Length: 280
Image 1: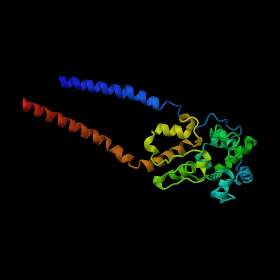
Image 2: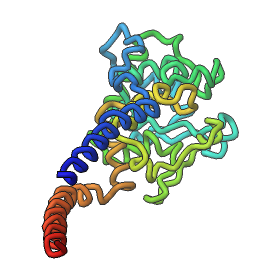
Image 3: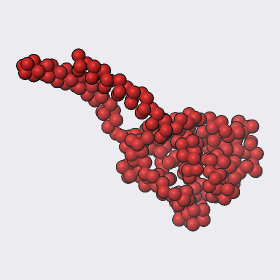
Image 4: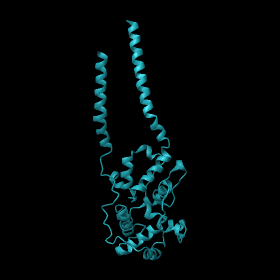
């Protein structure tokens, strides 16, 4: 009877700690934040939604390829990466996949004013390496977006999405990927390697942080990237494939371990009963 009461006390104390203290401590360490917003509702949509891809190509050729490459269209940057670093402090990204991995509303607003769209106005006040194109009409920006949509690949692998979205800043040393493009200097802060990030942060944290870093870490230098929900899932899937490749195997052992522990508990209890019965 005493043993049973002791068991009840242990169960009650464990329950209080698990369902009372632990959630409180977790809430203090990881405060609740608003869920990820894949529509980027804080950004004003264009008044013109349908763009003309042909006209958009002309605008891109006149304004964008002076800095950016579009490799799928055979357009390379007009200068070397070293020259770009010297001139801008950063190598401008290739635009081949922009319309696939970035949300349409975000992409349009990034063209208008990238510092506002990426929530980096606290870091760049009128001096962002990419100039604002808010002098363009909504129709012209819609045309640019339409052109970028017309040249985007049909699909990309998880690693390709990661490289285009994150690989200019972050290393993934476990997969022998090393960031280039000068972004570590451009951001003015140490940029972490992401090889094991999937093991140190839960999925909710990663989704909300990637969607809007300021929600989790106010004042961070990391820009809001503007990924679509699908692209973000692919980034996390790639991080998981590199940093937690044994997840499925590990999780498949969970129920087996529980069954084993229950059986061993029963055996231990029966053995204990026998020992004490023989002793008395």
